[in-house]
Amino acid sequence: MATLIGENIILRALEPEDLNFLFSTENNESFWEISNTQLPFSKYILKKYIENAHQDIYEAKQYRFVICNYNNNPVGMIDLFNFNPQHNRVGVGILLLPEYQNNGFGFEALKLIIEYAFMHLNVHQLFANITSDNLKSISLFEKFNFKQVGIKKDWIFSNSTYKDEILYQLIKP
Image (cartoon, rainbow, N blue to C red; front, side, top):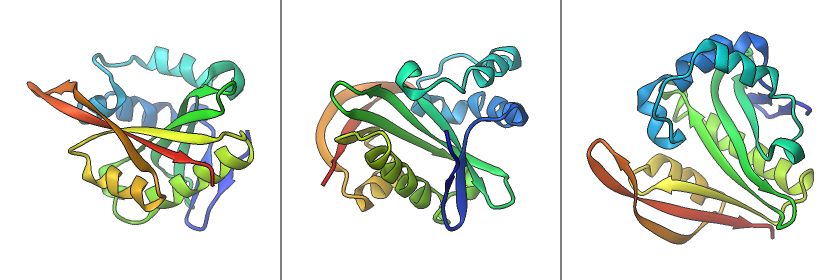
């Protein structure tokens, strides 16, 4: 899969050199809520994941891009998941490290992935699942005209409390 190039970032495939970045990100408990993770990952498991990351999205039904600044430093990840070519839809999720938030990287990454999904995967729609308290993500997706189409009540149990999860869709214009 080709690298997607923006003005201030690039979206690229996982590389073996990303092992430590992936290890620290996937094992950061503050991110577990959005990734539905409950246990830490070993470096061995993540190394195997990176080795298989070359799989075509039509085969794996998902694809992870690393968001890098132009110094090729990883600043986050953006995932396409639950790809369904029969119904022409794919989910999208984004994670930016806190120190790289609020500088336009997320906006640019989402813009690139929307263009890629509509033009190259020929999907009819993208969807995102966002907890109702994740105001930064809600704001980001709404900037691209993702529309709230449903609320899953008490869907996520985190820190001894239930949270609603909002389903957003962007249908190809």
